[in-house]
Picture: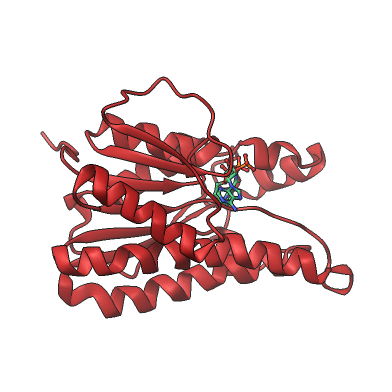
Length: 242
Ligand code: NDP
């Protein structure tokens, strides 16, 4: 029987309060890991307090990321898994894109991944093990109308992960990307219905994804089942971008 067992593993999930991030935290917990969930606003979650640490912090703050990583290391004694999931979108066509909307998305979606990977990489290098996982988007791979900022940030994390995979591979630290397609969450709930229908119609499977679909791919990449996979992108999109 193949079993995913992350017992004893310590994970940080950014944007872990809700949506895909909460599903990732909950699935990692089910696989036996301990999880620190980092978010701008952490609500109450009914998880085992011995294995779940909610932390309020802004991922776009470089120094705060270092502090959070140290806090988790001090509490649990190691860091095995970082899931850079926190993300925002501020959609606008290029000719109307404001400097603020550009910078906010780059700071959170790309900067947040950099801040956490940079802070954890020294610990993982010394441990000679670790898994860095970034949540990108198929729109970072193909570009999306109205999302120059988001597509650039999400493409940026792919470059970040590939370079990190090369730098850290010899220390047995792996770095990979999960690129979701259309997943039902609060982020996508705000989309007008006709855009949701169009996204579903693009998929080969003719359905939207669930947060658990992303969480399952993350847990696979966090586990030894993927021990020879690094620098890779796994699209979880129902065939939306084939
Ligand atoms: P949600 O908007 O539902 O959740 C995102 C979470 O990130 C929220 O809890 C949010 O906090 C948090 N967050 C935002 N900014 C920061 C910050 N500066 N510091 C810390 N936490 C922050 O999004 P999803 O769950 O849908 O998306 C998760 C990831 O998946 C994102 O990176 C997104 O780009 C990506 N993705 C999602 C797709 C989808 O279809 N849903 C498709 C492709 C990619 P708060 O609640 O306070 O705003």
